[in-house]
Image (cartoon, rainbow, N blue to C red; front, top):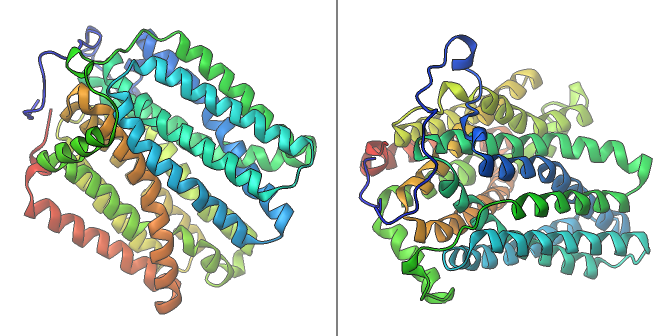
Length: 433
């Protein structure tokens, strides 16, 4: 591996005894499922299948309930922001915690906390409490638990699978999450008229019980001996940021996602485009297709991840994926055909999947185990915050210059900034395993 951050003191991952098996015919294109042969990773991944859909039921139910109570989209937006600050704070702290305690134990605590929160969501809904304040508090608590959970969950992967299988493991996990973003909202739309809103929360709580059971079956994942004397506090969080600044490949992997999302995620303009540019196709149909296209493309990319998950030049894969994302978003902004727009957004989704797979692999392989939790904490903040900043930027630009101009301009900006950064700082393009 072309990086100086490796440590011979790290726990050994399972032997890659099956990784050299040749893949022929269609298997070269299909998703690489080798990590699923490892029982511990298989348990972690299978729990994600259930919660990926269940969490989306709650993600639909909360804004729907707030809108039903207030009749105001502004309150829905305020609720989203109410969950953002706890997510940021606890993701950064949770990364430090994940580096100083048994990650399995942390996952058990946080998944149990999320499950209890879902039960409380159900109770307030089934009793007809009708309080926006209670919903916001529960949402903040849920996001805090999620912020603590995500770094430990992601950092654990490198302890469960061999290094050369990290891209495949990330592809498996990302595909499941993206599938949940497609299936979950559709399922919620079907279930709400049939069983009612409160039961969506209950289904999510039951799904989380499956997750808790699966995590309980994992092996112990204690911190390294060098981390036992540390405490998870501000000093450790600051040390994580110093570590990022000292390791350019990690810093560049974060910047690549920020560039792609902040400049090139145009979801805030989807309603305007649906009502203006694509109105002849039917506003409702257009809006649904625009929101679904990127996740569908990402799922397709995951299912065909055998085409790229064995690549060794991880840095170039990230650069190429971000540039491809920018090009697809530019094409989306330039077309007035809904069907071409969906194709461009789906291609962007494939590029986003490739970027997620290799950025995740870089974070897990280029950082030592005692720093992986903090790296994943920052990663969680970047992934959560980037699209929200993009909503503000694109919404403002769309109002000033028009929606299509803002989208196309953002896509071109992604290409220019990413290529400029890649050639100005060679660490990312030189990185490989």
